[in-house]
Image 1 (cartoon, rainbow, N blue to C red):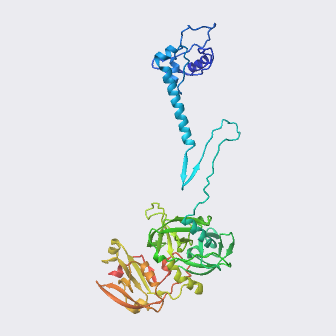
Image 2: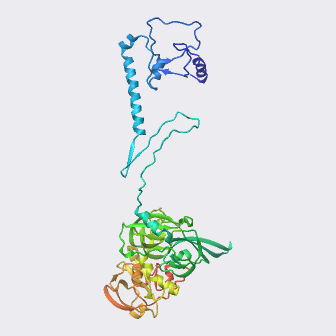
Image 3: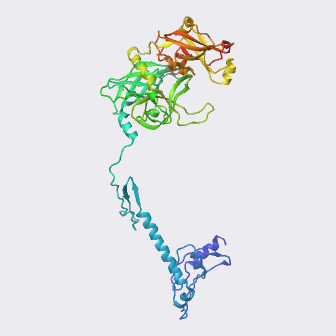
Amino acid sequence: MDERDLNKMDNGYENMPTANGAQDMNVRDISSSSGQFQYNASAPSQPYSMPENYVQQPSEYDRYVSQFNTPQIYPVQNADYAKKTGKGKKIALIACSLALALCLGIGGGIFGTYIVNGNSITASNVSSSKSNGGSSDLKIVQSSNTNKGTTAIENVVSKVKDSVVEITTESTSYDAFYGQYVSQGAGSGVIISADGYIITNNHVIDGAQTVTVKTTDGKSYKANVIGKDSVYDVALLKIDASNLTVASFGDSDKLNVGETAIAIGNPLGALGGTVTSGIVSALNREIKIDGKTMELLQTDAAVNPGNSGGGLFDANGDLIGIVVAKSTSTSSGAAVEGLGFAIPINNVKGIIDDLKENGKVTGRAALDVTLVDIDSESKMVQYNVNEQGVYIASIEENGAAKRAGLKVGDRITKLGDTEIKSVSSLKAALMEYKAGDKADITVSRDGSEQKISVTFSESSSDSESSNSNNFNADGNYKYYDGNIYDFFN
């Protein structure tokens, strides 16, 4: 049957008479296994009457449609017919059952009760027959629970959020193609004194001509750089303000993996005061950032560009770290998530006073050597050594190591009582000493261990170095990753 046949049938069905002469059907095509059912479109010219005992039987069309619609109750003129067939009772029973089920289903869904924290919240929904924009009969019952408790994280945030600030920087650069231009940067900082001292990362403010600090009350201040240190990537700022909210220092040496970690900062340089939370994922994680190996806290609290210099807090609201970096991909290019890193606050405590008083770290103990981490079998083969560890690659003339009798190729195993397993662990151990202090260094040389007494010299590294992300800026305990095969032959 094509479209023209269907249109003809439409026109015919519109005038099709029913048993009582009313025109109430508009159907297109009803198929059955026995062929097409076509209805005569012309109404009878004379009214006709039914036999006295005639009962209209359901048509094939009615039987077909009844499969898809709610059960229909056919008119029953002859009670005996309905009684004999039993269809009247069955149809009525089905209809009543469906109606009852529908009422129970709607009633159960509308008047259900939800229990939250022992408080009953009841919502009722009353349908309205109005569909022309009239007022709705929807009734919502508001919860009477006004005793919403606060979470531990909420308590921490309310305590410390005002101690974290937004930092923006401007620096002037020169390019052979573009000429002189101004570049902008952004980061975060943490207030450590009520009169305006703020700590942040060195790389946030390094090279900037202007540094601006914005507090949570919306006020902006011009900040002065008091001091900075490229080794630990820390800088100390000062703004002219008073009665500021101060972060209290925690003890990063007492942290445990799994403890709550809350990061607050200025991600993307535009979302100041952003709070993310997670856990301390790892401690003493050795991470190489732009060639510089640092020993950091690891967290899965989300951090993004702009979070640098912001605070990492514990469940008590104590500052346990300064956010410094996140990992976005592996060396093979695979994307990663949930890898954020922070400088342990105990590593920062020891240099803040020095930065405040001298603008840089002074009296830092130095060995005056260049070191190399040999941490894989391939490097063992490359450098022709039998064991992994921290090796001396070069020694400065007239330096502390030279005076003590240390040699190129020595593997340092201990500084005092501290085991040395990496360059970063040696750097951390050296932070416990000052220039002029003496300590025993244990080295492995020619298959045997020797204990050598060393008097540390003062680090000649320039903490003001513009290359804040280059570990080699500290010339006294560099991380050397070149080919020094000749030193070990």
